Image (tube, rainbow, N blue to C red):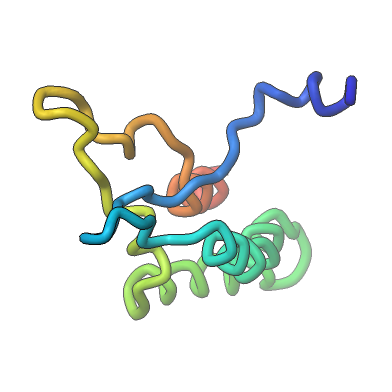
Length: 104
């Protein structure tokens, strides 16, 4: 437990909590986990220093962004109050993480 407490500064990855008409969440936890499973090897490849793996990974991320709706849950937001900011400014998404990895 002490190890987990020491790592508490690392933000958890989330997707939008945008609700549907019946009040349920549009994106489930299992949906987020499956997206994490897909993107983890791609993001890890960005840090490879040998061969063309990093370039191929960045090209794959570009394809995911331009040709699919993979990052759509990260771009959706919900206004939390009439005058307040949307909740997307308070969470770390896979899109945020992908941009950080490519910029590294």
